[in-house]
Image 1 (cartoon, rainbow, N blue to C red):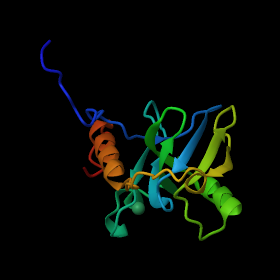
Image 2: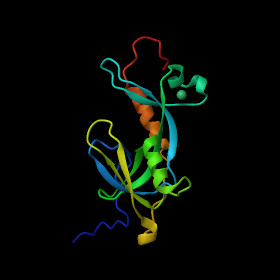
Image 3: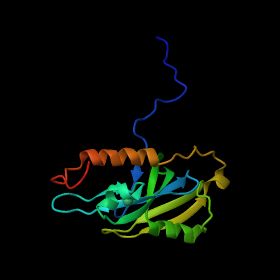
Image 4: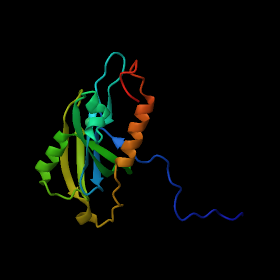
Length: 177
Ligand SMILES: [Zn+2]
Protein backbone atom coordinates (compact mmCIF):
# COMPACT_ATOMS: atom_id res chain seq x y z
CA UNK A 1 0.00 0.00 0.00
CA UNK A 2 1.14 3.58 -0.67
CA UNK A 3 2.31 5.74 2.17
CA UNK A 4 -0.59 7.16 4.22
CA UNK A 5 -1.01 10.89 4.37
CA UNK A 6 -0.65 11.63 8.06
CA UNK A 7 -1.81 14.99 9.35
CA UNK A 8 -1.61 16.06 12.99
CA UNK A 9 -4.27 18.77 12.70
CA UNK A 10 -7.37 18.74 10.50
CA UNK A 11 -7.47 21.26 7.66
CA UNK A 12 -9.06 24.52 8.71
CA UNK A 13 -12.62 25.07 7.60
CA UNK A 14 -13.18 28.36 5.82
CA UNK A 15 -15.48 31.02 7.17
CA UNK A 16 -16.23 29.25 10.40
CA UNK A 17 -16.97 32.42 12.34
CA UNK A 18 -20.13 34.38 11.81
CA UNK A 19 -22.44 36.80 13.60
CA UNK A 20 -25.58 35.23 14.99
CA UNK A 21 -28.89 37.04 15.26
CA UNK A 22 -31.72 34.83 16.47
CA UNK A 23 -34.64 34.27 14.11
CA UNK A 24 -38.21 34.00 15.40
CA UNK A 25 -38.73 30.78 17.33
CA UNK A 26 -35.01 29.99 17.31
CA UNK A 27 -33.12 28.78 20.34
CA UNK A 28 -29.41 28.21 20.92
CA UNK A 29 -27.15 27.21 23.76
CA UNK A 30 -23.68 28.69 23.97
CA UNK A 31 -20.67 28.78 26.22
CA UNK A 32 -19.14 32.28 26.38
CA UNK A 33 -15.51 32.67 25.42
CA UNK A 34 -15.45 36.47 25.73
CA UNK A 35 -14.71 37.90 29.15
CA UNK A 36 -17.51 40.42 28.59
CA UNK A 37 -19.60 41.66 25.66
CA UNK A 38 -17.96 44.13 23.24
CA UNK A 39 -20.29 47.07 22.62
CA UNK A 40 -20.51 49.36 19.58
CA UNK A 41 -22.67 52.31 18.67
CA UNK A 42 -24.27 51.87 15.27
CA UNK A 43 -26.73 53.75 13.08
CA UNK A 44 -29.77 52.32 11.38
CA UNK A 45 -30.91 53.39 7.96
CA UNK A 46 -34.59 52.34 7.84
CA UNK A 47 -35.98 50.72 4.72
CA UNK A 48 -37.46 53.14 2.22
CA UNK A 49 -39.00 52.42 -1.15
CA UNK A 50 -37.77 49.01 -2.23
CA UNK A 51 -34.46 49.46 -0.42
CA UNK A 52 -33.91 47.32 2.61
CA UNK A 53 -32.81 48.90 5.87
CA UNK A 54 -29.19 48.46 6.85
CA UNK A 55 -26.87 49.26 9.71
CA UNK A 56 -23.75 51.34 9.50
CA UNK A 57 -21.07 52.03 12.10
CA UNK A 58 -20.93 55.21 14.16
CA UNK A 59 -17.42 56.53 13.68
CA UNK A 60 -15.25 59.17 15.33
CA UNK A 61 -14.95 62.11 14.98
CA UNK A 62 -18.73 62.37 15.13
CA UNK A 63 -18.80 65.46 12.85
CA UNK A 64 -17.53 63.21 10.05
CA UNK A 65 -19.66 60.15 10.88
CA UNK A 66 -21.90 59.28 7.89
CA UNK A 67 -24.79 58.28 10.18
CA UNK A 68 -24.56 61.45 12.28
CA UNK A 69 -24.28 63.65 9.19
CA UNK A 70 -27.45 62.01 7.84
CA UNK A 71 -29.14 62.31 11.28
CA UNK A 72 -29.87 58.61 11.51
CA UNK A 73 -30.91 57.17 14.86
CA UNK A 74 -28.29 55.35 16.92
CA UNK A 75 -28.48 51.99 18.56
CA UNK A 76 -26.17 49.92 20.69
CA UNK A 77 -25.18 46.39 19.74
CA UNK A 78 -23.10 43.99 21.80
CA UNK A 79 -21.18 40.92 20.65
CA UNK A 80 -20.04 37.89 22.63
CA UNK A 81 -17.61 35.36 21.19
CA UNK A 82 -19.25 32.02 21.96
CA UNK A 83 -19.09 28.34 21.20
CA UNK A 84 -22.46 26.97 20.10
CA UNK A 85 -22.96 23.66 21.84
CA UNK A 86 -25.37 21.82 19.55
CA UNK A 87 -23.66 22.56 16.23
CA UNK A 88 -20.23 22.60 17.85
CA UNK A 89 -19.24 25.87 16.15
CA UNK A 90 -17.80 29.17 17.31
CA UNK A 91 -19.79 32.31 16.56
CA UNK A 92 -20.37 35.89 17.67
CA UNK A 93 -23.70 36.30 19.42
CA UNK A 94 -25.25 39.70 18.76
CA UNK A 95 -27.13 41.13 21.73
CA UNK A 96 -29.46 44.08 22.14
CA UNK A 97 -29.52 46.51 25.09
CA UNK A 98 -32.51 44.55 26.43
CA UNK A 99 -30.56 41.27 26.40
CA UNK A 100 -27.62 42.96 28.13
CA UNK A 101 -30.00 44.17 30.80
CA UNK A 102 -31.35 40.63 31.24
CA UNK A 103 -27.82 39.27 31.52
CA UNK A 104 -27.00 41.87 34.18
CA UNK A 105 -30.14 41.00 36.13
CA UNK A 106 -29.07 37.37 36.11
CA UNK A 107 -25.41 37.97 36.86
CA UNK A 108 -24.72 41.46 38.14
CA UNK A 109 -22.57 44.16 36.56
CA UNK A 110 -19.06 42.91 37.19
CA UNK A 111 -19.50 39.36 36.05
CA UNK A 112 -16.95 37.56 33.93
CA UNK A 113 -18.93 35.93 31.13
CA UNK A 114 -16.19 33.59 29.99
CA UNK A 115 -17.11 30.03 30.92
CA UNK A 116 -20.81 30.68 31.50
CA UNK A 117 -23.35 28.65 29.53
CA UNK A 118 -26.44 30.49 28.30
CA UNK A 119 -29.59 29.61 26.48
CA UNK A 120 -31.02 32.30 24.20
CA UNK A 121 -34.48 31.87 22.77
CA UNK A 122 -36.50 34.21 20.58
CA UNK A 123 -40.24 33.84 20.81
CA UNK A 124 -42.33 33.40 17.67
CA UNK A 125 -43.34 36.45 15.69
CA UNK A 126 -41.62 39.57 14.45
CA UNK A 127 -39.38 41.61 16.76
CA UNK A 128 -40.24 39.47 19.76
CA UNK A 129 -38.06 39.54 22.82
CA UNK A 130 -35.25 37.14 23.59
CA UNK A 131 -35.42 34.99 26.68
CA UNK A 132 -32.05 34.50 28.35
CA UNK A 133 -31.29 31.64 30.71
CA UNK A 134 -28.10 30.92 32.62
CA UNK A 135 -27.64 27.16 32.33
CA UNK A 136 -24.32 26.29 33.90
CA UNK A 137 -20.77 27.27 34.65
CA UNK A 138 -18.69 25.38 32.17
CA UNK A 139 -15.26 25.79 33.66
CA UNK A 140 -16.13 24.65 37.14
CA UNK A 141 -18.19 21.76 35.93
CA UNK A 142 -15.88 20.11 33.43
CA UNK A 143 -12.49 21.84 33.78
CA UNK A 144 -12.31 21.74 29.99
CA UNK A 145 -10.01 24.46 28.70
CA UNK A 146 -11.78 27.01 26.51
CA UNK A 147 -10.24 28.52 23.40
CA UNK A 148 -9.02 32.10 23.58
CA UNK A 149 -11.64 34.79 23.00
CA UNK A 150 -11.56 36.78 19.76
CA UNK A 151 -12.62 40.36 19.12
CA UNK A 152 -15.55 40.89 16.77
CA UNK A 153 -14.12 44.14 15.39
CA UNK A 154 -12.30 42.76 12.30
CA UNK A 155 -15.47 40.91 11.28
CA UNK A 156 -17.70 43.97 11.81
CA UNK A 157 -15.33 46.10 9.74
CA UNK A 158 -15.45 43.54 6.94
CA UNK A 159 -19.27 43.27 7.03
CA UNK A 160 -19.78 47.04 7.04
CA UNK A 161 -17.29 47.42 4.19
CA UNK A 162 -19.15 44.77 2.16
CA UNK A 163 -22.55 46.29 2.86
CA UNK A 164 -21.19 49.69 1.80
CA UNK A 165 -19.91 48.28 -1.49
CA UNK A 166 -23.11 46.33 -2.19
CA UNK A 167 -25.77 48.80 -1.23
CA UNK A 168 -27.47 50.63 -4.06
CA UNK A 169 -26.47 54.23 -4.54
CA UNK A 170 -28.78 56.60 -2.75
CA UNK A 171 -29.66 58.31 -6.00
CA UNK A 172 -27.85 61.53 -6.68
CA UNK A 173 -24.92 63.11 -4.94
CA UNK A 174 -26.47 63.97 -1.58
CA UNK A 175 -24.59 61.09 0.08
CA UNK A 176 -20.84 61.06 0.06
CA UNK A 177 -19.06 57.82 -0.76
ZN1 LIG B 1 -22.39 58.41 14.26
